Length: 170
Length: 222
Image (cartoon, rainbow over all chains, first blue to last red; front, side, top):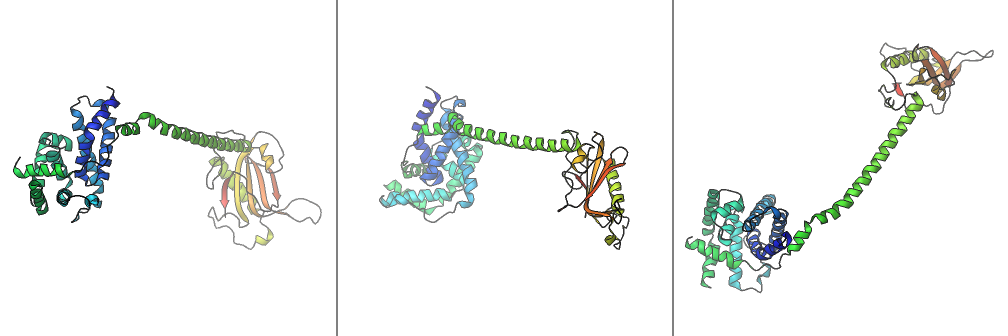
């Protein structure tokens, strides 16, 4: 299997999960796809140097987190927390799912970027603290710190708590 | 993982909708393919090369033209700096410049028209020491043969001379018929032997408008 074929297979297997994680990080599909495509393009440029196949997902996650944190640093002044997150596709959706999605998305958007990244990697991507630290280019202790603060912030979010309770009932 | 963390993980996985479209890996591969870069870089490289060649031709042409002008004026080839800007000594050595100033001042002082005699004389300062009838003085180092371009010369030898041109209002007492008055003009040209400092040729003419020596060192400008 040559490099292009191997990369194509990898993208087909991982792209959906990467896009979902990117959506949680960015809050919209346009930015999420932009983030994933940028990360995959950067990964492809170094593809031949990633020798171990099991290292490929970790590498692309690391690139995506680095890219995301850099993006957020540049766009930080543009980011404004709002009370209600716009949800264009919500009209036809079920009310419960929409409200839970909006609550989760809003809660994530209120978190600082490092905490949001830690939560997405730990609880959505189900990474260990070590793998999360590798992806975020920080120490395990820093991951623990970001995660603990993020959980404290999320616990204090009443809308998220209610949405999680409603979700668990459904 | 405690209950809250479990619920959070469940919520995160359940709320994310399906991606609206798949990512085509070949688009990413094609976008970063070196061949694609070459298709962009090659025309840019050719365009850049064309611009560089054009600039080089222009620069070489200007240098060649400047060299030819200088060679014609001085007979010393391209290595001599072009005498152009005001205040620079291009084409004249320091000694030649001093000689040219001394001779030009002496010539100007002896050629002040009668109408200018009432004006104030020099006060000792080098600039103000120029007589009031002088507007501009320029000089160029060249050969005696080449000096014929500027004034009628007595020789066509390759000896080094300094051509000095004064622009202003001049009156020379010259020999001529009975009742012949002084010769007047607004451009005086003096040819001086660069070694001896002796004046070899001189001319006074009326030019409209009066012109300085081309590409010469300007020694004085009012």
